[in-house]
Image 1 (cartoon, protein in one colour):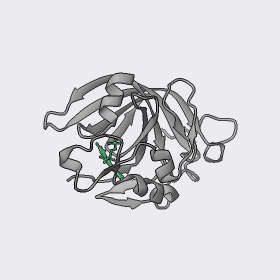
Image 2: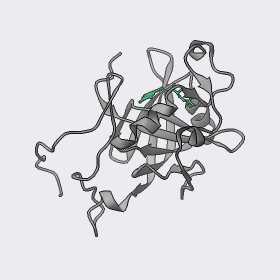
Image 3: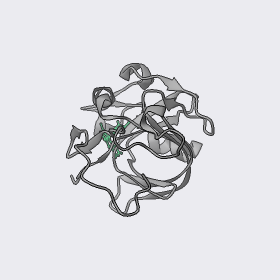
Length: 189
Ligand SMILES: Cc1cc2nc3c(=O)[nH]c(=O)nc-3n(C[C@H](O)[C@H](O)[C@H](O)COP(=O)(O)O)c2cc1C
Protein backbone atom coordinates (compact mmCIF):
# COMPACT_ATOMS: atom_id res chain seq x y z
CA UNK A 1 0.00 0.00 0.00
CA UNK A 2 1.04 3.55 -0.75
CA UNK A 3 -0.28 5.51 2.24
CA UNK A 4 2.51 8.09 2.06
CA UNK A 5 1.01 10.45 4.63
CA UNK A 6 -2.31 12.26 4.50
CA UNK A 7 -4.62 13.76 7.13
CA UNK A 8 -7.22 11.57 8.79
CA UNK A 9 -10.80 12.52 7.95
CA UNK A 10 -13.81 11.21 9.87
CA UNK A 11 -16.63 11.16 7.34
CA UNK A 12 -20.06 11.29 8.94
CA UNK A 13 -22.99 10.05 6.86
CA UNK A 14 -26.61 9.12 7.49
CA UNK A 15 -27.80 5.49 7.51
CA UNK A 16 -31.17 4.42 6.07
CA UNK A 17 -32.75 4.47 9.55
CA UNK A 18 -31.61 8.06 10.19
CA UNK A 19 -28.77 7.09 12.54
CA UNK A 20 -25.26 8.35 11.84
CA UNK A 21 -22.16 6.49 10.71
CA UNK A 22 -18.52 7.54 11.08
CA UNK A 23 -15.99 6.33 8.48
CA UNK A 24 -12.32 6.97 9.32
CA UNK A 25 -10.39 7.55 6.10
CA UNK A 26 -7.27 9.27 4.84
CA UNK A 27 -7.29 9.05 1.02
CA UNK A 28 -8.50 12.64 0.66
CA UNK A 29 -7.30 15.78 -1.03
CA UNK A 30 -8.63 19.32 -1.34
CA UNK A 31 -8.46 21.94 -4.11
CA UNK A 32 -10.55 25.09 -3.98
CA UNK A 33 -13.81 24.17 -2.26
CA UNK A 34 -13.66 20.59 -3.54
CA UNK A 35 -12.55 17.59 -1.51
CA UNK A 36 -12.06 14.25 -3.26
CA UNK A 37 -12.29 11.01 -1.28
CA UNK A 38 -11.20 7.46 -2.09
CA UNK A 39 -13.62 5.08 -0.35
CA UNK A 40 -13.79 1.29 -0.42
CA UNK A 41 -16.83 -0.49 -1.85
CA UNK A 42 -16.81 -2.68 1.28
CA UNK A 43 -17.70 0.12 3.69
CA UNK A 44 -20.87 1.86 4.75
CA UNK A 45 -19.81 5.30 3.50
CA UNK A 46 -20.31 4.63 -0.23
CA UNK A 47 -23.95 3.43 -0.06
CA UNK A 48 -24.76 6.24 2.37
CA UNK A 49 -23.15 8.88 0.10
CA UNK A 50 -24.83 7.44 -3.02
CA UNK A 51 -28.23 7.71 -1.38
CA UNK A 52 -27.95 10.88 0.75
CA UNK A 53 -25.56 12.87 -1.48
CA UNK A 54 -24.10 14.73 1.52
CA UNK A 55 -21.73 14.31 4.47
CA UNK A 56 -19.56 16.09 6.99
CA UNK A 57 -15.77 15.83 6.70
CA UNK A 58 -14.53 16.09 10.27
CA UNK A 59 -10.80 16.65 10.78
CA UNK A 60 -9.47 15.32 14.08
CA UNK A 61 -6.46 16.88 15.76
CA UNK A 62 -3.45 14.71 16.61
CA UNK A 63 -4.43 14.06 20.27
CA UNK A 64 -7.62 12.33 19.06
CA UNK A 65 -5.71 9.44 17.49
CA UNK A 66 -6.87 6.90 20.09
CA UNK A 67 -10.51 7.79 19.46
CA UNK A 68 -9.88 7.23 15.76
CA UNK A 69 -8.20 3.91 16.46
CA UNK A 70 -11.21 2.78 18.52
CA UNK A 71 -13.22 3.21 15.30
CA UNK A 72 -10.66 1.40 13.15
CA UNK A 73 -11.91 -2.23 13.54
CA UNK A 74 -15.58 -1.27 13.18
CA UNK A 75 -17.97 -1.03 10.27
CA UNK A 76 -21.45 0.36 9.96
CA UNK A 77 -22.13 -2.30 7.34
CA UNK A 78 -24.49 -5.10 8.43
CA UNK A 79 -23.81 -7.89 7.71
CA UNK A 80 -20.03 -7.38 7.66
CA UNK A 81 -18.79 -8.11 4.09
CA UNK A 82 -16.96 -11.46 3.80
CA UNK A 83 -13.68 -9.72 2.90
CA UNK A 84 -13.75 -7.86 6.27
CA UNK A 85 -15.34 -10.52 8.46
CA UNK A 86 -12.14 -11.78 10.09
CA UNK A 87 -10.94 -8.39 11.35
CA UNK A 88 -13.98 -6.09 11.61
CA UNK A 89 -17.21 -6.11 13.59
CA UNK A 90 -20.45 -4.28 12.98
CA UNK A 91 -21.31 -1.40 15.32
CA UNK A 92 -24.34 0.79 14.76
CA UNK A 93 -23.47 3.61 17.18
CA UNK A 94 -19.90 4.57 16.40
CA UNK A 95 -20.20 7.84 18.34
CA UNK A 96 -20.75 5.83 21.53
CA UNK A 97 -18.06 3.28 20.57
CA UNK A 98 -15.44 6.00 20.13
CA UNK A 99 -16.63 8.30 22.93
CA UNK A 100 -17.34 11.13 20.46
CA UNK A 101 -20.18 13.66 20.55
CA UNK A 102 -22.65 14.31 17.69
CA UNK A 103 -23.44 17.95 16.95
CA UNK A 104 -26.10 19.01 14.43
CA UNK A 105 -24.82 20.33 11.11
CA UNK A 106 -26.32 23.41 9.49
CA UNK A 107 -26.63 22.49 5.80
CA UNK A 108 -26.66 18.67 5.81
CA UNK A 109 -28.48 16.01 7.81
CA UNK A 110 -25.40 14.04 8.88
CA UNK A 111 -24.06 15.26 12.24
CA UNK A 112 -20.74 16.94 12.90
CA UNK A 113 -18.27 15.53 15.45
CA UNK A 114 -17.99 18.08 18.26
CA UNK A 115 -14.43 17.06 19.22
CA UNK A 116 -13.04 17.74 15.70
CA UNK A 117 -11.74 21.33 15.43
CA UNK A 118 -12.41 21.52 11.67
CA UNK A 119 -15.72 20.36 10.22
CA UNK A 120 -16.60 20.67 6.54
CA UNK A 121 -20.23 20.24 5.52
CA UNK A 122 -20.28 18.97 1.94
CA UNK A 123 -22.51 17.82 -0.87
CA UNK A 124 -21.59 14.94 -3.16
CA UNK A 125 -21.17 16.03 -6.77
CA UNK A 126 -19.99 12.77 -8.32
CA UNK A 127 -19.13 9.17 -7.50
CA UNK A 128 -17.00 7.30 -10.02
CA UNK A 129 -15.49 3.82 -9.72
CA UNK A 130 -11.71 3.75 -9.34
CA UNK A 131 -10.15 2.10 -12.41
CA UNK A 132 -8.35 -0.47 -10.26
CA UNK A 133 -11.68 -1.66 -8.82
CA UNK A 134 -12.77 -2.03 -5.20
CA UNK A 135 -13.21 1.65 -4.42
CA UNK A 136 -15.08 4.77 -5.49
CA UNK A 137 -13.73 8.27 -6.12
CA UNK A 138 -16.16 10.61 -4.43
CA UNK A 139 -16.01 14.29 -5.34
CA UNK A 140 -17.56 16.61 -2.77
CA UNK A 141 -18.15 20.35 -2.69
CA UNK A 142 -17.81 22.00 0.71
CA UNK A 143 -20.78 24.21 1.54
CA UNK A 144 -19.93 25.31 5.08
CA UNK A 145 -16.75 25.33 7.14
CA UNK A 146 -16.73 25.30 10.94
CA UNK A 147 -13.40 26.01 12.63
CA UNK A 148 -12.95 25.99 16.41
CA UNK A 149 -12.15 29.45 17.71
CA UNK A 150 -8.88 28.30 19.27
CA UNK A 151 -7.41 27.38 15.87
CA UNK A 152 -8.44 30.55 14.06
CA UNK A 153 -6.86 34.00 13.89
CA UNK A 154 -9.37 36.30 15.63
CA UNK A 155 -11.30 38.59 13.30
CA UNK A 156 -10.24 36.68 10.18
CA UNK A 157 -11.26 33.60 8.21
CA UNK A 158 -7.75 32.15 8.54
CA UNK A 159 -6.59 29.07 10.41
CA UNK A 160 -3.78 29.72 12.87
CA UNK A 161 -1.30 27.14 11.60
CA UNK A 162 0.66 27.43 14.84
CA UNK A 163 -2.31 25.99 16.71
CA UNK A 164 -3.85 23.56 14.22
CA UNK A 165 -2.36 20.10 14.70
CA UNK A 166 -3.88 17.71 12.13
CA UNK A 167 -3.69 13.96 12.66
CA UNK A 168 -1.70 12.33 9.86
CA UNK A 169 -1.83 8.70 8.69
CA UNK A 170 1.55 7.58 7.41
CA UNK A 171 1.98 3.99 6.21
CA UNK A 172 -0.62 2.86 8.81
CA UNK A 173 0.95 4.79 11.71
CA UNK A 174 -0.45 7.93 13.32
CA UNK A 175 1.61 11.11 13.46
CA UNK A 176 1.22 14.74 14.38
CA UNK A 177 3.13 17.48 12.56
CA UNK A 178 6.53 18.90 13.54
CA UNK A 179 7.76 22.46 13.71
CA UNK A 180 6.87 24.91 10.96
CA UNK A 181 9.69 25.00 8.38
CA UNK A 182 8.61 28.10 6.47
CA UNK A 183 5.83 29.65 4.45
CA UNK A 184 5.08 29.87 0.73
CA UNK A 185 5.13 33.24 -1.09
CA UNK A 186 1.34 33.18 -1.38
CA UNK A 187 0.61 32.66 2.35
CA UNK A 188 -1.77 35.33 3.65
CA UNK A 189 -0.83 35.00 7.31
C1 LIG B 1 -6.69 6.04 9.84
C2 LIG B 1 -7.51 5.25 8.86
C3 LIG B 1 -7.52 5.60 7.53
C4 LIG B 1 -8.32 4.89 6.61
N1 LIG B 1 -8.37 5.32 5.32
C5 LIG B 1 -9.30 4.78 4.50
C6 LIG B 1 -9.53 5.33 3.20
O1 LIG B 1 -8.89 6.31 2.82
N2 LIG B 1 -10.49 4.77 2.42
C7 LIG B 1 -11.24 3.71 2.87
O2 LIG B 1 -12.14 3.25 2.12
N3 LIG B 1 -11.03 3.14 4.08
C8 LIG B 1 -10.11 3.67 4.91
N4 LIG B 1 -9.93 3.15 6.16
C9 LIG B 1 -10.65 1.91 6.53
C10 LIG B 1 -12.09 2.18 6.96
O3 LIG B 1 -12.13 3.06 8.05
C11 LIG B 1 -12.77 0.85 7.34
O4 LIG B 1 -12.99 0.10 6.17
C12 LIG B 1 -14.06 1.01 8.10
O5 LIG B 1 -14.61 -0.27 8.38
C13 LIG B 1 -15.08 1.83 7.33
O6 LIG B 1 -16.23 2.02 8.13
P1 LIG B 1 -17.68 1.91 7.50
O7 LIG B 1 -17.78 0.54 6.86
O8 LIG B 1 -18.62 2.07 8.65
O9 LIG B 1 -17.80 3.00 6.48
C14 LIG B 1 -9.11 3.81 7.07
C15 LIG B 1 -9.07 3.44 8.41
C16 LIG B 1 -8.29 4.16 9.31
C17 LIG B 1 -8.30 3.77 10.76
